[in-house]
Image: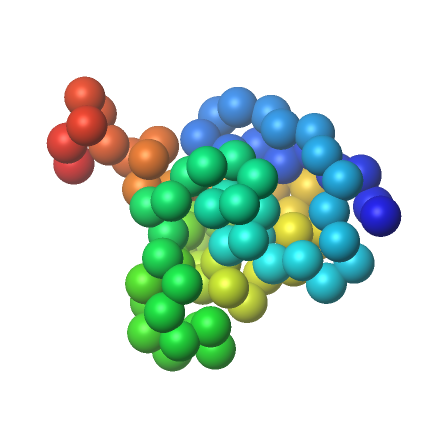
Length: 84
């Protein structure tokens, strides 16, 4: 499995990811960041939105291994004191 370092909410996480593992899976199942929700899993509903290098993206459509060097922000990173 590829080993990558992902910068999520200004913190680096180094982990092994599956060849076709999506960012949504990494966020929810490995890093316990559950703000991005699985909805349609086809990139249509927007429940899994994250911000990658300043652009809104569907995390269910992004392969985690391709995000090394990118700045990823989740809803958890946007909240302040538990509030948006």
